[in-house]
Image 1 (cartoon, rainbow, N blue to C red):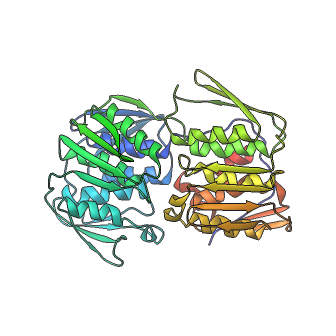
Image 2: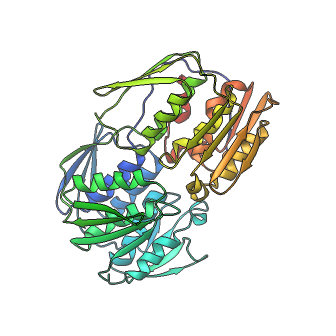
Image 3: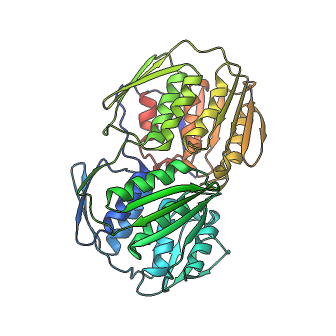
Length: 425
């Protein structure tokens, strides 16, 4: 167990935010599937998940070079030969690799992960794989890795995907199936995070896949056509889910202005929707070219806050800590996907808020937090091996004389230097 004790501040003004993990991992996988073509990637994420996918591709002889802030990937459509593939707790990596390992391997392959990954279900992805002709043996528990994936032949069928638990099932298949078939038809049902699916579609379009989509009976029908071709150069936009913690940190500080210079002119991540939440609590912002300006007005006299988190599943967690302002009650809903992340986040964040005196009511898809009764000078944060728990509670570090964190290294999964950067603020 690693425990860190924080007391002193680091005084600097400039913070460094790397590229989006979600976009980086999608771009890396697709670039590796562009046969005999080089893709130049700028501002790649430095997250642990991104490093895992790069190491995996290097092991299967995909050539990847780094020069300054650029990565060069030479794509190669080559079947996976590795017998054992260990992917730690990288959900964005496990899902596409799980599918590819059934239909894109020379021989049978074992998909392995750490204890946290073994608690995250891939049952729906396996069901889709089975309908397309894939065969899988789960070595411990059905629907969870570790698994033994058998070499199979793909059947040409319409792909129906239940996105009730995670949109990553759809994203994984949208990325993977274009390798096997030039034409694909997807039917997405019970979508939880629509913006992540839109993000995936925007990325595969950049790699010359034609996409058509339409709405039918609350389901989304998606048609894709084409073969992956390199987009030559791509710049990964800054990770907006990480940035959201700095925006909310501003709420607890005396600072009134925050300027953020984006590496891209547009932001496609769904987490940008958290700006609508910030407006409700007294923030004003505007954008000029690549520069975002955030101003903190006088705090609005609002007692209750109610937020629909459907489009902001990751950044929405930090909203719960606004109870440390003058709010009396916060309700967030459409957070069902929290149950299937690195930890059961509804349970985890409720437990930690109770420790500091908050009154909590929770369900499978909602959470209500009532005004806290401040009790403690010292706080010992249990992270549940979940980077988002640490990132959320660091917003309120200043309220405690001593602040202890159990297993702080878990933050490497998405933002390696988060603690150093947030303490500058």
